[in-house]
Amino acid sequence: MGEKERGESAPRQRVSFFCANGHEVRPAFALEAVLPDTWDCPRCGFPAGRESAAPPNAPRNEPYKTHLAYVRKRCSACALVAARPDRLVALSDRDRSDVRRPVTVRKAR
Image (cartoon, rainbow, N blue to C red; front, side, top):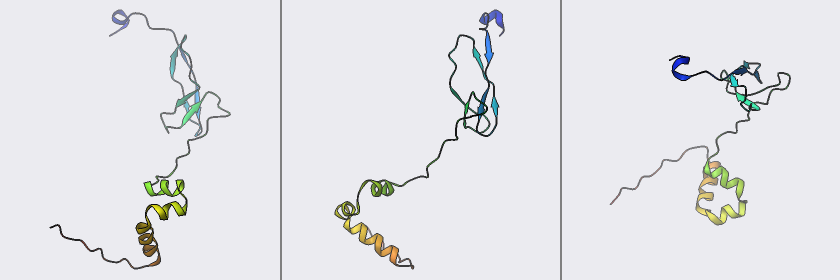
């Protein structure tokens, strides 16, 4: 497929974007297109900006949190005791002992 089948291509411009790792990305845009402020770097995936002296900061990744971690963050200690006193006792017993106890499995009837 050439220009005969598709028609004339739009005039293009190349714009430089710079990421925090020093990579330069030069995607092509149409002249009348609105240019984005940031562009993803294809090498490292960090956001890239148009200023080489001040590229955007790398995104901060937070570690994975369990459901219990979110509950602890949201609730006070008193609310946790009121919600699941049996679980709180089991956790405190487990934290106090260095030796793991065997788990008993009940058979289904």
